[in-house]
Length: 332
Ligand code: TYM
Image (tube, rainbow, N blue to C red):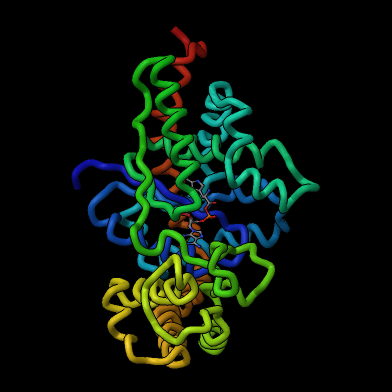
C-alpha cells in the first residue's frame, strides 16, 4: 500500500446498469489491492428525488450484495451505508457555508434533474454536490474513481477543499477524479448521444445488471447502430457501434482496438450477438452470487455494521478537526 485513500459511492436509487458497472465498480476492483478504499451506498443522495421507502431499503442491501458479488472484498475495503455515518450530514452543513448558491445552480446534473423533476426541485437536489464533497473530504481521499458524469462534482469538491484550506488552514486532502479512458461514458443503446442511465424511461436503452440472458441478448440485438455495415471504432462518426465495441472490450478485458480487429470482417448481427453474450456470460455468476448473498442477511448486516464502524472512526477524526478550525467550542 502506498498510503493513498480511495473513495467512491453509488446511489441505491434504481436498477443499476452496465454503465455503472463499467464506469465505476469494475474500476474499483484493482484499487482494493493497492489502496485504502471506502465504498458507500449513497442513500442520502438517493432521497433528493422521491423514493419509495421500502424499495430504497431493499435496494440498499441489494447494492451491498452486488458490490461483494462483483468482487469488492469487505475485508480489504470499508463498505458502508452513507446514512449510518452521521458525520456526512454534519460536514455538509459546514461546507454549505462556503459553497455558493450560484456555483451549485450551474451544476449540469442539478440543471438536468431540475428539468426532469420540475415538481420537486428541493434544497437537497441543489445541495447534492456539497454532500458528495462531504463524503469525499471526510475520508481525506486522494482518488475518486467515477464515470464521466460525476467529474464536475469532483471538481467542485476540489474547489471547496481548497477554499476551506485557504480560509481555515490546511485541513483537507484535495482529491482527484479518476476517470477511465475506456468506458467512462457508456451510452444508451437506443440513443448513443445520451448516457446509459438507471432512470431512462425506455427499458431497451439500458442493460440492467439484473437482466437475464434472453433480455440482454434482445436488447443488444435492438441496439441502434447505423446504416453502414462496417465495424470500426469511431466515436464521432459511428457512436452506436463504438459504444458496443467499448462494452464488448470492457466485459472481456480487452481494449477497443483488439475488439475492432476481432469483428473487422463480421456483420452487425453477429457482432451484436457476441457483445450480448460477453455481457451475459460475465453477469450470470455475479447475479447468482448476489442472490446467494441476499439470503445471508446476518452476514450482510455484519459487513455493513463493521464498515460503518470503520468509516465512523475516520469521519469523526476529520469532523472534529473541522469543528476546531471553524471555531466551534469543544471544551477547554
Ligand atoms: P450514480 O449512482 O449515478 O452512479 C454511480 C457511478 O456510475 C457511473 N456511471 C457511469 N459510468 C459510465 N457510463 C455510464 N453510462 C454511467 N452511468 C453512471 C457514475 O459516474 C458513478 O461513478 N453522486 C454519485 C454517487 C456518489 C459519489 C460520492 C461518487 C455519492 N457520493 C462520492 C463518488 C464520490 C452518483 O450519483 O453516482
